[in-house]
Structure formats: C-alpha cells, structure tokens
Length: 435
Image 1: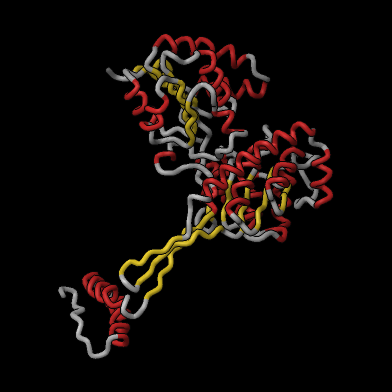
Image 2: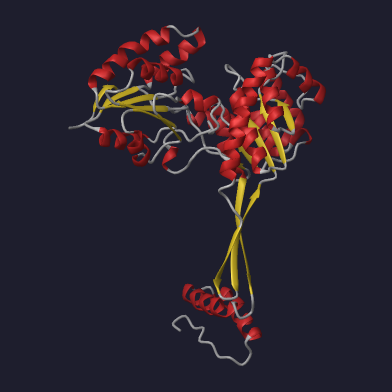
C-alpha cells in the first residue's frame, strides 16, 4: 500500500537563494576591500551597534556578573557534558603507522586547525547552547585560537549568558558582531584576529550563504538550511508527548519542517488534533514561528509497517530523528540517515539541543545522507606521511614507473626511474608500460 499523507507540506524549506546570494556577495566584497571600517559600517546598519567589537576582560567580567548563579550552573553542566563527549570522540582518532611493504612505512596524523571562528546566533533567541557546542568542541580538538562571534543587541551588546558560555568554554576572543559582517571579520582576520581556518555554528540564511560562498578559502562545518525534525511513532507512543515535541521544534522558525511518520492512523489523528492548541499556548513570537512551520512545512505520513517507516525516514534524512516506538534496538540498527538520533520517550531533541553532550550543530536539508554533525573531528586535519628505506622503495618505484607510463605521465615515471638507478646501480628493471 502507498504511503498516506494526512498532511502534506505546501512549501519547501528554501529561501530565495538567488537574492540572498547577491546580497551576501556584495557585503563580503565590500568588507574584504574596506576592512575594519567597512565591517563597522555594516554592524551599525544591521546590528544598530557602535560599541567595542572585541570584548575586553573587564567587559567580559561585567557581563558575567549579570548572569544568575543558577543559570551559570546550568551552563557549566551543559559544558561539562559536551566536553566529556567531545573528549570521547577525540579518543577515537589516533596517530597510526604501518609497514606497507618491508622497509616502506606510511602513517596518518590528526592535526587540529590553528584558528576557529564560532558563530553564535543572538537575534530573536539567545543561543547560549550554540556557544557551548561550538567553542567547547574547538577547544577539545586543540585549536590554537578560538573566536566566538555573536550579534550584539542595539545599545547593549552580546547577551551576558552567551558571553559567559563562550568564556568558560575556552574562547580566546569574543566579538560583538553579527551576520555576514561577523563571518567576514573572522574569515578575513579583521580587528587583529587571526584568519579563521574553519567557520562553524548555525545562523540565518545570510550567515549560511556567507559560509557557503567562503567555503574553499576557509573550511566550514556544513552548508546549513532551516532546522528540521522527524518523529517515528507507533501505537505505543504518547500522542501528547509526540505533539509537544513536534511543536517544540517548529518554534525554531517559520520554515522549519517537522514530520510525523507512523503506522497508526489513530495516533496520527490524535496528534494532529492536539498540535494547534499547543501552538496557541506558546508566547507570541514562538507561536508565530510554530504556526507558520506547521501550516506550510509539516507533514504527517501513514506507513504500512515499521520497515516502511524506517525507509521513509531514511529518505527524508532528517537533522533530528526521534523514535517513540517498541524495540528501540531494532530502530538503532536499522536507521542510517540522520544527524542525531533520540531513542525513546525518555529523551528528546530539546535535550540534545541544550545539555546532553551530543552536538546540536547538525546536517539539514537531507545532508545527513552524506555527513554527520559538528564534532571535534571537524576541526582535525587527518594527514598522511610516508618514509622508506632504499630497499623498501624498490617494488614501489617499479610499480609507480609502470603505472605512470600507462597513464601517459612520463615525468612521474622518471621520478621513480632516477631512484632505482641511484639505489640499485647495474640492475635492470623492466619499467615499460606493458612490462
């Protein structure tokens, strides 16, 4: 039986890409040519902020004084969890070497990038957790310099809790600048900062487009779109919890898709009946986002059985994937395409977004088909090396010469020839392409 859509999205989660690209390209070009002064012009225009760009130690201390003690404890709790998980991830990457053939050794090294730029959204929502997720992982990876960049509020500056989080997580510099101008400042090394080797962190469509344009001259975590979430639920799921979780993710933005995939029609209908009331109960700004996201982007899909549910989920490759169903081990083994997986009612995407330790900077727009989320590994360059004795190079040189000649690359072949002639004088080697 074909899948039955009780609710179908009327829009797709894409911005006006051509218009955004044109705007962002112009800003980046202006700032690259105009430097610090031009970046400040855009900060005054878009952030309505003309204060200090790089926070001093006194400014950081003053901001920290404004953070309630209980919130500090919560931020520290989340930081500790993210740090421990990042340390575990780092332990999975080792410097290794092996003897390929007798006398010829090859290996790999993991080298952290020197300078990381961490973007922390601070517009409608103050993304404290994004500071924790990005700065902590960069610090654990071993980056030499970490800049945390966040939009200041007009006449005020960066939210104090973001300053506190960035500071305790290990930021070397905290920059009060948002949007494209903040991304540009980190990339071009403005205001005395080192040029970033990698840019990480979520942002609006302009930040995402700036990272996309700059990718190549600087590394990025991923090309991101609007956040998305999918819930797999069977008849054992609690409809109220399912509905609440869908709404909790829809509040991210007006174009944030949420999807429910189930094999139980009764559950689906109950969830759909509950969602509008849960949205109405949100504060105004959150309600506007969730209402638009549910109306235009949400889908509710009925599948034949759990295998079809899993296949449907893998096709969507969601950023966040929740399973509220029997036999969680089966789902863990079966599912293959997601940014982060939340197994069982006892956990939720909101936990992962804030405090459990796994990272919330994750692949969107079906990018989970080919990549995972932000981790210490994103800041690590896995490089290779090799060393050989003269005898160890004998077989490798011959193979290299013959393969190169077959490819028509005579210069490559001769770099092997000269070594054979030097190391093994008087020996005859058949180095022709058909040898």
